[in-house]
Length: 187
Image (cartoon, rainbow, N blue to C red; front, side, top):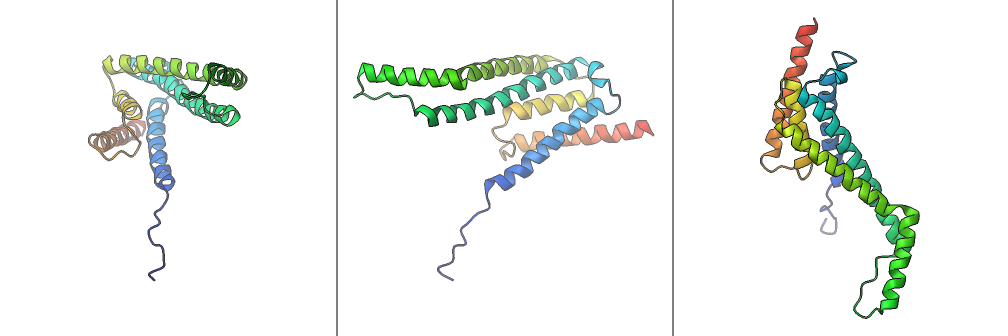
């Protein structure tokens, strides 16, 4: 058995999928806490909840644009290569390389998407700041604020370092308690 390879580890993707699934379930639970009792709930929100909905829309748009920009960046690099910047390149070579890059960029839309991503991220950051200064008036609003902190602040969705697992645990508790309270009041 000396020649067998038992050092192979399971791919990170498997664990990450489970964590992403849990985070998605928590976010869905928060949205359901907001919307579950009344289909028009989004229009009847408290101040923190209303900001959370706006933040979530901006955050998700920034995330979508980030993924799109990364895809376009790969396509741009595959099309024209990395921008030329070598000490040995002449000014003419640098200008030609930049012109090829700029032309492909215009066709692909990389810079425009990058700018749109930055603007969406700025809107999300402004809304997060406003949300953090807005007092919560219900458990779903507390959960929403924690959700925003987690989604914006933790380095990865399964970060084991303090305080992220503890905040995730508190968020799960709040969602569970709110759901239990909701079930008790609907009977």
